Image (cartoon, rainbow, N blue to C red; front, side):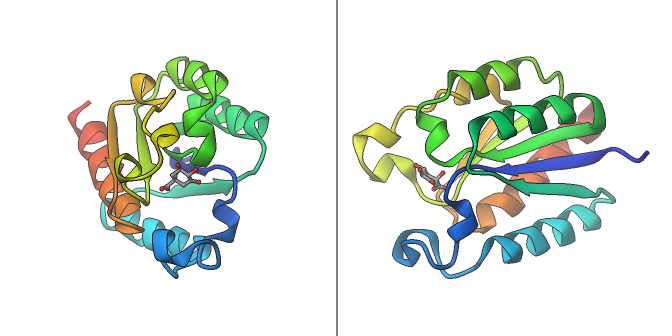
Length: 147
Ligand code: DQA
């Protein structure tokens, strides 16, 4: 089986496009998936794109990426700011990971300024809207090609 880049999305990102469009924009998660698949394809990579509102499901996908994936791009949504479990799963993943956010969390409420997962990833991209994901694909590919 060909290994893929795992792109994981956390809580409330299923509402992208409808949810606070002034902050997150009007594109849907399906649009994000299309953009990421196209970007990955230009580099010769496939993606597996998932979203869940449940922390444990995200942990399970990180474990899956450990054996079936080349790397992980993760927008953990609000779990970014709360989840030691996602930190531990990413630490154990043994594949490179990139943390992504649509918004510039540092311009927002103080509770968004701390990330539990930043210490477990290779890089962080935030504040570029949906383009953050495409930049993350480029960045992860750079890491993978350098390996
Ligand atoms: C987010 C930022 C988080 O603080 C927030 O809880 C989200 C989305 C972003 O992509 O900007 O759900 O991860």
